[in-house]
Image (cartoon, rainbow, N blue to C red; front, side, top):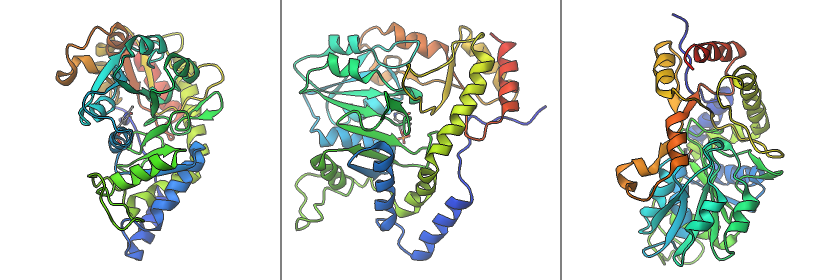
Length: 356
Ligand SMILES: *Cc1c(COP(=O)(O)O)cnc(C)c1O
């Protein structure tokens, strides 16, 4: 039996260890200088005026909704095929997540379906660059009136670009995740990127109990503890310094897979002129479940793509979404990291070829 191939291996090592050791030695484990350092690096990478780090991608989504004042009586449009946190963040604000179908070939939400789902109560659209593939942003903007806020779930899209513009800078806010399966990881972590000072202020307040730190320590609205400690910020900073190398390594691995698989299964790609963020490499095939079991039996860790929300107890009876159903049934995430080797790609491709 050959060595198992892991689904994802985070790209962390000596630089991160040294950075953590320095924070431990400093005695300032949270809300010290590393928070601002990581925030400036993220704003630089996303081309936004500001970035506010928080404890997870889910926290970023939740605070983005809170900062927009999303609440009871409001609707927020979300894709039917996404990680459930996208919709959960809306519903936990007391609003309704209105599901719209995705294009099963790209996995991203379709602007025409968004236009059809707009109503009097629509407060925002939470658009997901799924697996790092940029949403067709101009088509989405054109489909939605100006008063409806566009927010990006860019959890898997740090470094991705839509027509040259970084994901995270396209909407009024961008929500990033630093979970170990993302491009940059802090173990757990996330951030909200924005150009709007009022929104950045609101997110900073809400992540810290609602306290207005430069205003007499008032709490105008209740907040949470969604802070990201210095210990974890320190893990993210060296990765952001080498972000371009991380992205290039992922592009190279994606290229190896595509070369080997494009005649066999539907392979992922970005639209012409865009840059894929390659959070994951997710192919599509008809007998997905059989392939999934067979590859796992050979020690190749594969996974489904993500969830079709209307198949979950929390989001049942919200309409029919054939695109999301198709993606849910056919998507297969292959082992994918910056350190995936060409011979691992060979082994995965050969195993897959035996099961399509
Ligand atoms: C990972 C992910 C999230 C959640 O991020 P966490 O940091 O795990 O909370 C939300 N949305 C999408 C699209 C994701 O990929």
